Length: 460
Image 1 (cartoon, one colour):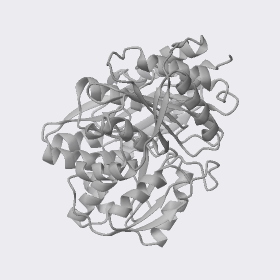
Image 2 (cartoon, one colour):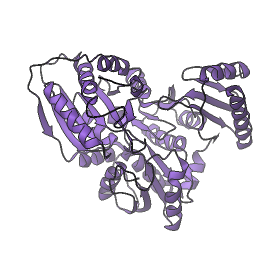
Image 3 (cartoon, helix red, strand yellow):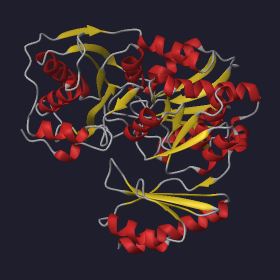
Image 4 (cartoon, one colour):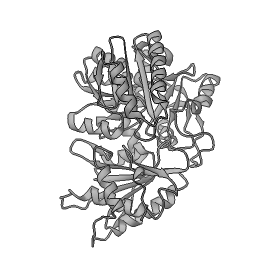
């Protein structure tokens, strides 16, 4: 069986269909995943495995083969159907199942598909990625090693999960009083449409829907809010509708970007800071995690509100690993992922939306003004470079900026009194990623340009 080892990424399995993932090679991959998940299971009751899927055109056939493979292995399957990744995580955590796989390629283009894997830990869900087992799964899949079981598999369909997910999110946020807002949401014909629709059946709002029909060909645009061009129509619609805000989830719904009433993107660090302050008001002294790309704004907000800060590597597998090992009430990632201890340390976008609306209601000000209240730094936005010698570039950066505080947790991050930057290789694409932030805009722009020129010079 030919399996490309490069499809096993830092956070999940992701590949082009049918070239590198298809109905044939998904069989040894799923066997390896199940073998990995149950290897340490010692309880007397049956091991329960959630299976979910997204709306991609290749997902139905891949999911069908995955389920048949698991049944042949004797698995007890909980079929949650077509759901967002946050809903999938919620199902595993909230109902106490042992593990789960989600057939999805997140925000990648329509030709892609893949598998996200999670298992239940002592303190929450554990995402299976590079630090937590993906290499072991890769080795077993390539060598076609798996369990041989005489158990008879079973399948149970689980329904009405979204209703429970919304109710749980409302509880997490404290059953908030929220005024009626006008909200435009562009779901990109992808999975975020489900939880946004479910939320605003419970919370009164004037919801203007864009691209809510599930369509794995993504006819409107790629479901990736990190690509600025995918947000243009939403930004225009927010302004033309005179809406209070806009919402832009990604393909599988585990990332979410906000647009203010002026059509501007609200940086995820601001959203992290809003949620962190709200949580710390009720839970002083708790720990909040942020990834290493942008830290100046959230650190100041967290410290101003008697919280403790933890810095993590980029990626959900690394963040959930840190939450499980050392604790944290909440984590916010610069790419629009948000994690709550109360959702099993998994991404959950519904309580994020609710918290933002709760704070906007209490403050009774425009979203842009709220964002300005929380802003403590200026950010460059992620700048990507296609290079063949990333190790050489990183070493050159360390040497050039050695008079700063150098951190090598994830690539190279260097801090100075009034600015800092992070340069790291992508875990999902052959790219070098640069992020620069400073306490004032001019310094950010100057250092951004300086670093871009240096990387281009060294990379040539």
